[in-house]
Image (cartoon, rainbow, N blue to C red; front, side, top):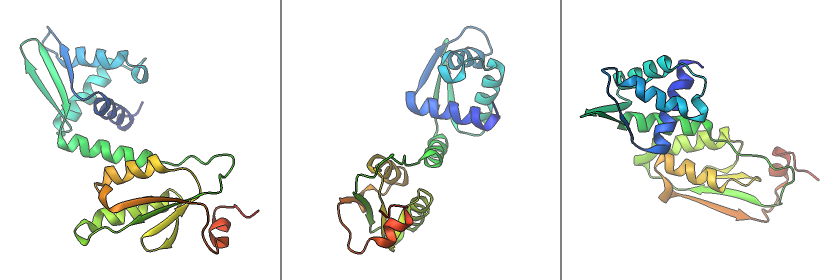
Length: 185
């Protein structure tokens, strides 16, 4: 497993579980922590030394914080770590294409203020990468179910109040849309 993949798995694991607390007795506190990670399904068979090195790397780069108290160590994501997790989740976001179209359009509509211009541009870029078709500057269409993905995308970008999703059965003159998605029949 490459270092980036291991870093990603550890950060996403911490994001799912919140804070991790481990009891230790030896001076090398990262090894017991690495053993805990090694017990998880996605880390089985991985060298605990590499896991410990990756945890050390995450600490040095301010992605996690390790707090030692008595015989326990607490591991938690920092704000930088949370941002990195957000980036990983955005990278992994995709929309499954069902075998049969339900003949409904999903229209993403947004009116994002100028002060959130970066998030607005990021939303447009992600919609394009997800395969949406731009109907108007702030209206994008997709024929596949994507409610959860759009909600997550808006949450990750911090713009949930400005994004709406409409599910419609008919769009006038949708030949260009159906052609784009290979749905002419």
